[in-house]
Length: 141
Image (cartoon, rainbow, N blue to C red; front, side):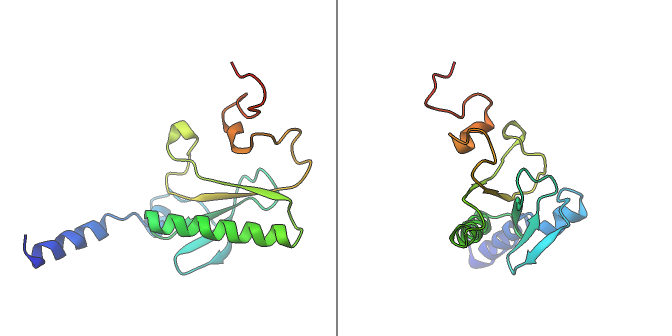
């Protein structure tokens, strides 16, 4: 394959990358409450927060590299808030596919701040996404 063909393939691949702008135009990205607009991502308040401060970090291009940057930013924001004593802990996660609970079909990272006492038994953390499976110290049937 010659350089021109490789260049055309690279251009075609670049065009296939989903973008936040396109997802918003198509109604697949309903977020509007912007906390901060960065060069490669946007930080939004979640429209249906499970805790105070629940937010979403959304890449402007849906690539693995950009999604990893979203996780990095979520961790930085969360650790800064823990260090300041604003929160006691946090959960960070992503839902991929309807079976995993994804309802907005554009990638986004959830940052869920946690405080002592915000749930009766936090044991298991993200394991609680499957009902009855969170507390791994109990025998699960």
